[in-house]
Amino acid sequence: MEIQTFVDELARLIKRPITVEDTDGNLIAYSAHEQPVDAVRMETLLRKGASKTTIDVLKKHGVYEAVDSSSGVVRVKAIPDIGFDSRIAVAIRSGRKVIGYLWVKDGGGPLLPQDEAAIIKMSRLLSQHLPGTEPAFSSSAPQAGSLVMELISPVGKIDPAEFTARSRGWDLNPPFQVIVLAGKPLGRPGNVAALREQVSPFFSDRKLNALISDYHDQVVIVVMGEPSYQVKGIALGLSRYLEDAGFRRFIGLGCSCADLTMVHRSYNEACEAISLGTKLHLDDEEPFLDYGQVALYDLVKCLSRCKAQGAYGRDLVRHIALFDRLNGTDLMKTLEAWLDYGGRRKDTARYLNIHPNTLDYRLRRIGQVIQCPLDDPGMRLAVHLWIKAARFSEQDGGPGGLD
Image (cartoon, rainbow, N blue to C red):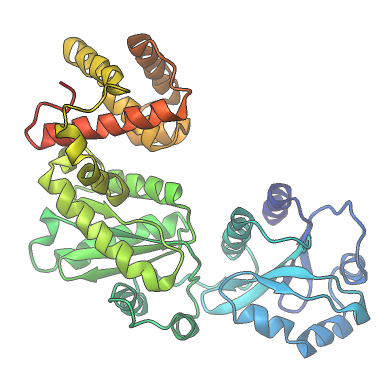
């Protein structure tokens, strides 16, 4: 029943009919189909599985071989001879073993990136529930460590096709984003491995697709197949998880990348985030150091010290800063987080570790203080920049970049 719920939810999300079959073609679950049904789908639904003839034809055309050898989705061409319309397929794996297939009706047009990500994520979820499931690969197994070392090496040392072929058993699905753990617990021999072992259950319990390895005085985590805003949530959850476990840590987050050859850049950015963030003492107040945010301080450095600039947006930030100083509130941090997360209410509240209703209350207070709605994109950008400028100036020993 749980598998059927998953299938219905994915079909609703991507608005395409779906079937799930095992490796023998037996039907496990299927979604509703209101459009015309091709002969193979009708056969599969009526027989509760594909016929031997259909399976043999698909094998003859190399369909299963193509799907089995891909770590992502595969568009399968139509085979008119048997009444098989084009489909999108992905292998459902348990470790290195293919245990089933998720078939999606091809709508003819390009598959949206979010739909492709949803299909891949569902295939991983289904792998935990289909018969034949084996113990999942350990994200921190020795093989995973060697993969991480290759990925964070300089450009030119990785051939994506060859690397993928050697990495069967792991879903190397983009985007890729690196989290680096470094800090005080890593200064003594053996503590890096201990921290890696502490981190691994966090990812496996949440069924997150990641490769984990210790490297010198760091633990390096390559998160795969998750959008950037989700990885920020993962970094936030990891920070709190480690705090509860008694580890003092610095967490650096690199930028998202779409190609295996760029993982090394995300790694370097995560390291730079820790370096810049600690210099600016941001680690004292931030649960993790995001390169996309930390690097921004370098960009606004001149703005924080350039008094000849116009006041567009600056006066609003000045009012909030003054209100915070007089009332002991933290509205500036609230507004900064809300802007950082693009106004996403739940993500902002989770980052601030407050209830969404508390966030709503603070945003109303901010509106009362500045007496100006932030509906205009230009004003939002100006306010966002001035907040960053003020933060940089404060950390750099300046007056806050507002006066």
